[in-house]
Image 1: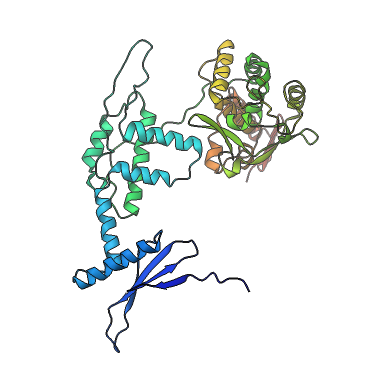
Image 2: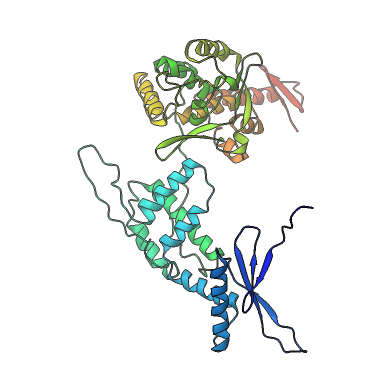
Length: 426
């Protein structure tokens, strides 16, 4: 028979010490009750101990409290001590502990760390200013204020010191982060209510839109202006809707040229000073896409010219070293390519926006766009249903044809057909 895994109990001079399977020690004792009338109660130490000696020391202290008439329930004392510590804890103490328990992706964590560090804890950074000029912003930090002492007025004063005009989006995000931290403190019963109540603060920023989407010929021009070994990345970003990190982590084995598909299951992101490979942004981002036939030739040429023979070989590497292309290097090359083509204000992520917008223009449903783009929610997919340049005129002409079909002599009331547009009325 195997050895028993039941905890071993050792008697001390008073109470008992139990050896747990983890190797730690648990101390307990019985107290109270009336002989023959009421059973005593077993009290267990609120935490375990590293050694039996520490456990017995705790038992001796409990026995002294009973002898001196100062005894109360260990749990009651532990709860009181915890509340005392919480009342003394600063916002920095609580926020740091709250932050360490989070499970955000690396990019989100890095962004929130910056907001916590520079905005909420007030280690200021200079706002963006024209070259040659300096501007200093003095912010009022909240980090050293006891969390239970935070008031609405203090948070309002902190908000007013932020560089709202220069960095409104970052300030709103910092306010939202602070609101979430204090909401957690309310849930933990450290605060009775959330003191974040600044009117107008933390509102979602106006969604960036592209007035004039680059046309397919312009996308080709941008791609041709990229370093030749990265040209295909622009085409994949635009017509397959992949994120930059997903593109830069693509490997030869992710492509099935016989089936004409590409599998997306990883991405590369910057975690502080290093590039880290992990799962993509969301579970919905793990997907297999059919490659548009027009791109098959480009992909074959790229693989034969720039990619190693191993399935693990990156499609895009840094100067042929086999290492990932850093995000900053990738973005700078893209911006230079856009400037070469006379385009400004276009970000690499806009390629994803552009591709999904053109997909919507072809008649793709929201659910199809959601699957193609790897979005978790329908709302996320809807953000990419912008109107491509000239699309409003096409829609207006189509509606005009529908209207005209209803005005023709002998037209049926249930459907109309005109110039290839068929509409069924329901």
